Amino acid sequence: MDLLLCPRIQTTVLKLVGFVARSTKHGVHRGMSSVTIPPPACMLRPLEAPFRYLFGPGPSNVPPRVLAAGGRPIIGHMHSEMFGIMNDIKKGIQYAFQTSNNMTLAMSGSGHTAMECALFNIVEPGESVLVAINGIWGERVAEIAERMGAKVHTLVKTPGGHFTNAEIEQALAKHKPVLFFLTHGESSAGLVHPVDGVGDTCHKYNCLLLVDSVASLGAAPLLMDQQNIDILYTGSQKALNAPPGTAPISFSERACHKMFNRKTKPVSYLLDMTHLSNYWGNDGKPERTYHHTGPVSGFFALRESLAILAETGLENSWKHHTEVAEYFWKGLEDLGLKLFIKDKDLRLPSVTTIAIPEGYNWKELLAYIMKHHRIEFAGGLGPSVGMLLRIGLMGYNCNKANAAMALAALEDALKQCRMSKA
Image (cartoon, rainbow, N blue to C red):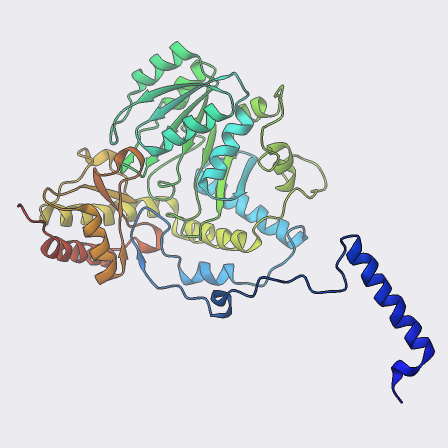
């Protein structure tokens, strides 16, 4: 029997048709498909990503152990087990930074996120900020501070230059900033900047010291508490060897006093440390409340990378990076190349910079090495573009075999890419 011949079913169908007609008239289209864009062909193919040797300034290749940690099953970002992992991360950062600061955590985002978190929470509109610029990272901080309404003053040197404590003190006395920014590992120039005495000088003028260690942490000595650094941050994707996307940061008690006694709210809700301190269990409250969904897999990977650093030992890590860097530097000089940073003590062990050899197109060199050796090197960044090449050997990639591979690729490129003198 045809069900549509049943009067009761006919009545029901007519009511439904009437509902669809009325819904369409008033702009509701529940009764019909609204899909007009077909599935993209690329999404119907498997994901493909080539293997490459990431010998640039970061990210670096990730060890299998960290990849495996990031691939573990997801748990909830507010589960008690997740809070335990976050507590482990905090302790790992305290070791890596050499700090006992309670206000220690990892940002959900790259190093830029930590950079903005520091500025947004410490500085209020109209306050004075002093920024040391000797590469791209000082430029970025100056722009961010200017955008948020700070009075920005700068100390500027060309890429590769560094500032004496006397120069810093003179600027502090003149501008009376609430915050001074310094890049410890300036990856755009390959420079590791001296930090000893800078924190003491800042405190003499009632100024907080903010230090960027994204390219240097784990590769060059840095001691947050001993060197009186008030805010220190880094990124996960360099010598720490985790995937990009998390950024450890720590605030001293002096910084916390400034941060939690503001007259105005920070310009970013996401980066507001009033909320983040609770999410990370740093505010002394018995319960953590929802603020945002943290990158669970990213935190798994970061925890594992910090565990590897703890097992290796900070001093051993610093020594290893220095030994491999010195081996690499000698090999570069044997090839007739000139290191961009002349003073050996100021060279960043994790990112080596080479002056572009005369007669070569640097873009051609990099393209040849990528095509024929599957190796990523990089050119300059920001003010150092066109001045140098950057080669990173850090963390998992930091060994003499990789240094030799990089040297062989450079030697090959120098033979094949010689430009015409015509």
